[in-house]
Structures are given as structure tokens and as C-alpha cells.
Amino acid sequence: MKLYSSQLSPFARKVRILILEKSLQDQITIIDSNPYEATDEHLRANPLSKVPTLVAANGECIYDSYVICEYLDALSGEHLMPQSGEERLLALRQLALTDGMLQQTFNIAVELNRREEHERSMKWVKRWAESLVRGVDALADSLPGYEGTLSLPHIGLVCTLDYLDLRASDQLDWRAQQPALKAWYDDFGQRPAMQQTRPVS
Ligand SMILES: N[C@@H](CCC(=O)N[C@@H](CS)C(=O)NCC(=O)O)C(=O)O
Image (cartoon, rainbow, N blue to C red; front, side, top):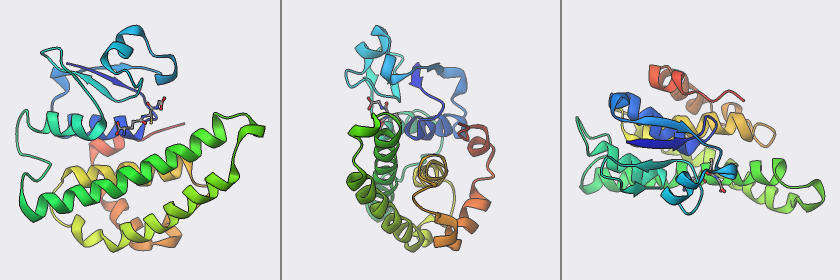
């Protein structure tokens, strides 16, 4: 299998952590790809020109990050995504919040770093930043749902908090806002797969 990925993409990082946690490294070649200068091969695999994109062993092309994680999770070992019932609904809700926060943070980064200054809309940046502040409170409220063994939502939460540090530290200070989140992160973020994939700009 091939995974189109980039070092700073939090969506790709979720997949890279899952690969490490499930010891799938030998089955997947990770190809560093800049989605803004994607190769023809990458574009054939994903017309949206995004990372992550997985090309499975049978040639099937799979995106986006959640679908890739579900696909890889089903390949072997203990499931990291609950398969049914209340547990699955809770996990889907947790992922909806963290993926949504990743998207809002990504939007801020694009607005501030990829647009010409005269094209930027600080009104939109403010709107996204406000939703992140509310999101941090909601994450803290949802912490009881993160007790227990590793699951896909745990991976999503670590990626989200690190991405807030990387791209939204001028907008909010999630550690000061919710010290309980910091305590969770300081513990869970120690896992080798989280450390090995931590983004460095
Ligand atoms: N919902 C997608 C989001 C993926 C995404 O937006 N990736 C960014 C990098 S962090 C990207 O490839 N952006 C390129 C673009 O939007 O043109 C997922 O979960 O995989």
C-alpha cells in the first residue's frame, strides 16, 4: 500500500499514528507529497488533491483520513474504532468534534499563511477562532469519554491539541483555558507513536 502524506498535516498524522499503533509499517510506503504541487499519480489517486490519500494493495484509492483509518483498522488486530452501539456513536461524535476543530484550524492557517495580505478576512479568522475556543471547552467536557484504552478518538484528540499549538497559538491558549486537557495530554501524548509523529514546523 502507499500513503500520500505530509509531515505537517494533522489529518495525515492520524493515519500515521494508527499505522504505528497497529504495527502496519511493513505494509505501507509513506510518500511525502505537497498537496499544492501534487504529482499526477497523487491526483489520479485523489482528485481533491489532499493528504492523506491511501492506495490500497488492490489499487483502490481511499480518502479521507477517517475512511482510511477505518479501512486500516479493519485489516488486523484489535479494533481501535468501536464497531457498534453506544460506544461507536460516542466515538463518531468525538471524531466529529476533533476533525471539525482540525478543519477550522486549517482554515485559519490557510487564511493567514496562504492568502495575500489584502485578500485575508480577519472576520472569518475571528469566527473560526471563536469556534475553536468553544471547541476546547467541549473537549474538556468530553474528557470522561476518553478514559480507557487507546481508540481512534484518542489519536484524533492528541492530533488536534498539537495542531492548535502549531497553527492557532496566537488565537488561543488551550492549556490555560482547560488545565484538565493539559493533564490528559501530558499523559497520553507520551505514547511513542504520538512522539514520533509530533509536527515540527
Ligand atoms: N477531511 C480531510 C481533510 C484533509 C485535508 O484538508 N488535508 C489538507 C492538508 S492538512 C490538504 O491536503 N489540503 C490541500 C488542499 O486543501 O488543497 C481528511 O480528513 O482527510
